Image 1 (cartoon, helix red, strand yellow):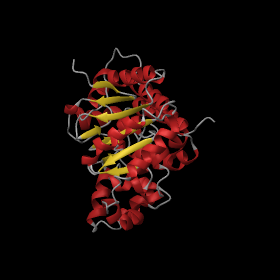
Image 2 (cartoon, helix red, strand yellow; image 1 turned 90 degrees about the vertical axis):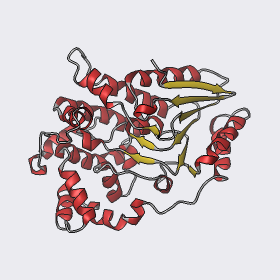
Image 3 (tube, one colour; image 1 turned 120 degrees about the vertical axis):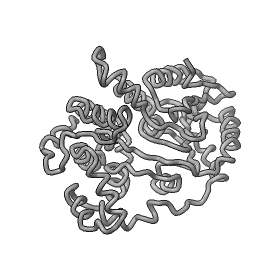
Image 4 (cartoon, one colour; image 1 turned 180 degrees about the vertical axis):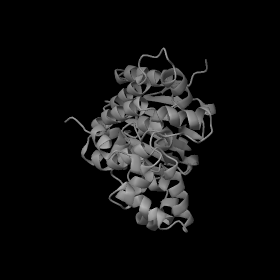
Length: 350
């Protein structure tokens, strides 16, 4: 089997390359376990001063979890006793990374979604390129943005947080800089120069001092932010999503269906799991008061529930397996969603 994870040590820098270009580096169970194994080994290696997450394809850092692997080997496999083992293992890796003892650097380019964001969002230094398409589109698959990322989405202004979390729309490199999701925005041609400098710095510095020195170097290549899709449409995002309930968002969209922007969003939301949309709407506010680790634990609880009621199975089967794009959700209308069920699901033990 091809090595989808390739570790490499360059002087004092450990590099973990994601190497599954056919699936845009989508993470399967074996890849998750191997990343953990490498990180644990390097954490105890005194010669390694920092770790870099990178990709060997320019099309993606990581497109998320390998949903086909998840469906075939866990969700739809009768002999699988732990349907949530994939997620539980992935989430433990993400929490481990968030507490990693050595500096972590990540290189975002191309598709950066789902599990790929979870793997890298807590890095000490994130390098973004122009090609980045950053998104958490899980509500179209019968669950919600997971891997603790709602801890970050909840820091966005309310309208944008719902646009990104409920609707799953993407952010560009300039957005990631503006909203402090990424540390530096560079031209791809300058990436190797910056990494060569990181390798040099790692021979002299370690810990926070290494990251501070790298930030100074990164500033030499930092590009000015550009106007993005979000910038161009911010007034409309505010108009439709700066609401205190999901019902109000729908009402605002319904009243403006002559606006192509509103109509397209309205149709998109109507085609998603209404229960999970409601869960994500409430979760945006809840996660403002949770730590990253608490958010990850809540995510596992929500995903287990999505498995239990069948929404995740329907979503992945329709979008990834059958590709008919017509999942029959448990609630096809928002009016059928029981808000008490949502609130009970989102109860967090402190």
